[in-house]
Image (tube, rainbow, N blue to C red; front, side):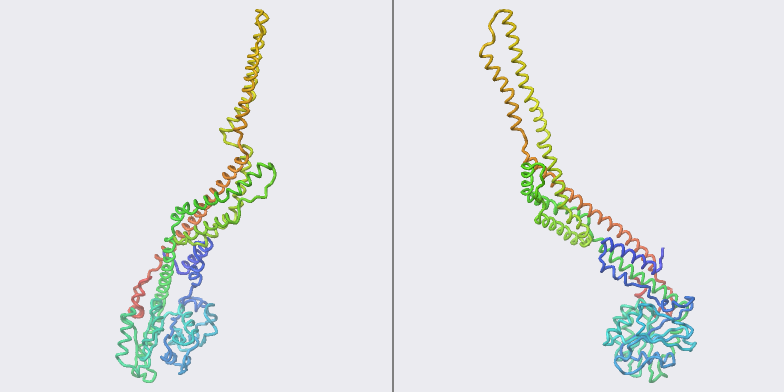
Length: 531
């Protein structure tokens, strides 16, 4: 669906603000959109009650000494514009309008101190507002800036040259840059000093610029009876019709929409170069070496902390696991990740800001994880199998001696009973020795195994600390993936919104090529092709 330029610009500016806030668009790239404004000829007449009353805004543009001011005075029949030989002649904008238009205020972006406003009562020129622009090739840089500030508010530009200066490069570059946005009339003034070869050469230059049948006139204030001034004035008034103004307004808006779409497509091209999947794929290549280095480098303080816990159970140790070296190694890995992101077109600042919390809290998180798992390891030293074996041995340490004592007691009682009944002898010395040995072995064997299989608190604490550090570093890796995924999601949303904006611009940037014959000659052919 076609949209107005103001609506599209507002949407583009809102999108840019959102993308900047999300870190998806550098603030410098959003400046172009922020600086755009609804600068159209209609804005000069914001005080009017009806847009249909708006006149045609016509400006004289040219280099120093070509006679712009003299030509304007001749057109209006009144010496409104300063004319002279001083270089530069014009340092301000002279705005000349019919008294029926009340210009109570000008758009805020226009420099009021450099504007001279005058009124007239000539009904023949009631449909035209005249502007005499400063000399574009002046040595004063402010003149060029003033011309550029007024250009968006102009419908028709009368490009005035002289036979000696019709190839002026500065004004010509402006014509090539601004040609598609305005209707143009061309005047070779001071024709009393000109030659046909110069006029024909100027026409060829205009054809190269896209004006196949340019509205080109010869004028001379010294010999007015032989020039084309009357034809120029007649055709200029013909362009001042309501239909022409409407066509110029629609065409100007379509061109501005086209330029807006062109800039947005450039931004989209930058977006499409961002390879978040490639960054995720390369994450392991960056993080795994860093994780190994950290586990190896933190082994010594972990061992010292485990030894302290084993020797001083329950006391708080003044030993730090995470030190400056570990922080530096982590920062190096995160910086390398940001560098790889930049190389794939991903905004580095946004990713760096998103990684900052990891950079700040990784050490604290690692210390907390390691302490928890380390203390858990001290409470339950050894592996599950070892603890099961130890429990069995502890049971055997009591059960085996008791079993041996029970067997010996049974034998003693049994032999004693049989001896009494049968009158046979009692147990001998060998039985006594063997019984003592059996009871001793049944107690010593599980006791020895229990001592040998008892896990070391030092090793248990160290392994617990290592496990905690590994878990903490694995959590950091998961956070890194989550950060990249979040950045990718924000990128996807911004890219989709940007694509929708471009589609709206493409649908709206359609120039009506059915202009009248006179207007078609005043417009460059290249202007029908929106960038």
